[in-house]
Amino acid sequence: MKEKCPYCSAEIDLTDKFCPNCGKKLPDKDLPFSTTQKLKIYILSILLAPFGLYWFFKYFRNENEDKRKVAFNVLYISIVMIIILFIINFYFVKALQTYVDSYTLDNLGY
Image (tube, rainbow, N blue to C red; front, side, top):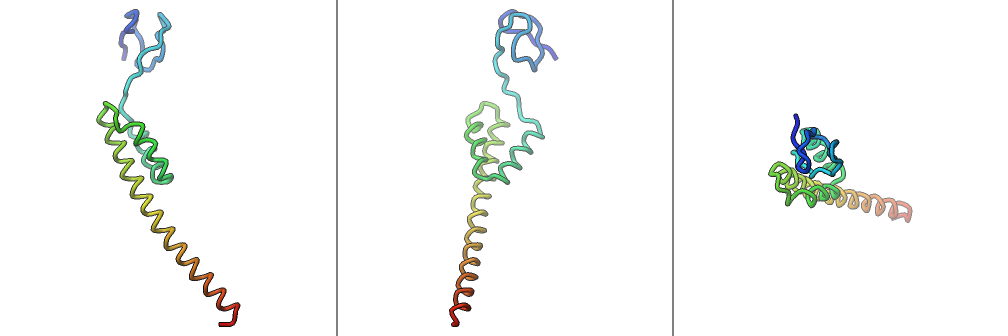
C-alpha cells in the first residue's frame, strides 16, 4: 500500500521512515500492536512483573485505544504478579525460618 509524502507528494511505502524522493523524515505512524507484540508484552509482564510498568507508562496516554487497553492490561498483570511474588516470598521466608529454628534447636540439644 502506498501513500503520499506530506512534503513533496511523492509516493512512499507505509514502512518508510524517510521520503525516498526528498529525504525528509516522515512523521511517525501510530500503528496498532500486532497479536505477536501484545503476546510478547504480556509474557514479559508476567515473567518480569515490575518491568511491565514500563509499557503502562509508555502507552497509557496514547491516542490509540488498542494501545491504552494493552497498557492497562499490563498494569493489572503487573499488580497481580507483584502480589503473588510477595505471597510466595512471605511463605518461603516463613518456611526458611522454621527450618533454621529446628536446625538450631537440634544442634543445641533441645
